[in-house]
Image 1 (tube, rainbow, N blue to C red):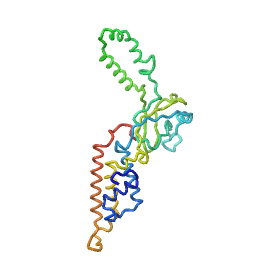
Image 2 (cartoon, helix red, strand yellow):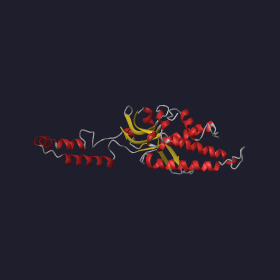
Image 3 (cartoon, one colour):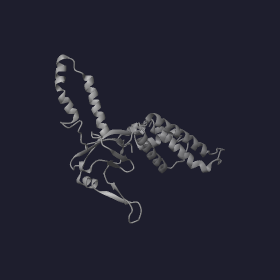
Image 4 (cartoon, rainbow, N blue to C red):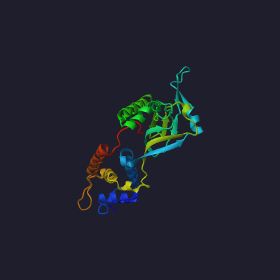
Length: 276
């Protein structure tokens, strides 16, 4: 099919692009399956259409609280007086399909924004008379109010007491490390993260028809074809035809390099600190 919607249809499409069934494609089915997995992994990690922005919540449990109060002790040497270092177990397990986390909410003390006696609300309450009189006489200064609110947001970011908190995340660990006071991990409260979640192609079949996936997988199969034939380079076949696996391999590698360069320039998400 010209618009593959399943894994098998994508495989058949790429083989046809390489000349099948007119030509025999010397690549094993297991090799193609591996290449499909490689193509999907690259697509999900480096292409903005391979992920979706999600908000996921987690209710803090007693186990989370106990783990946050625990630590691993590490000594630098075997000497009796060796220094002892502690590594806090301040992490929460994250689903495997989460490839990056950008924000964490729910474990902060918002003295600037949310508290009734916070700076932002207090400023509004102190200036409520001028707001009401301004509306009455048509001279409400929205510009000044906007600039003050922007200033409060800047304070919130600098002192790190707003909704955002310091955290660390690595995709290969599937752990969200939250660098906060352990006392703020209250069981029963909810933790909210803004994250990038990899699209499941079995659920969203349009992934198989993506304009990057199809040529990229075709080039991967072509390179594997050339790799399989390299040791037979120059062998004469019946009819005088000779194999040139190395040329096939090099052509495919050039196509892959061009596609990856295009992906980095046009399709990759902007670099942010907490992409795992």
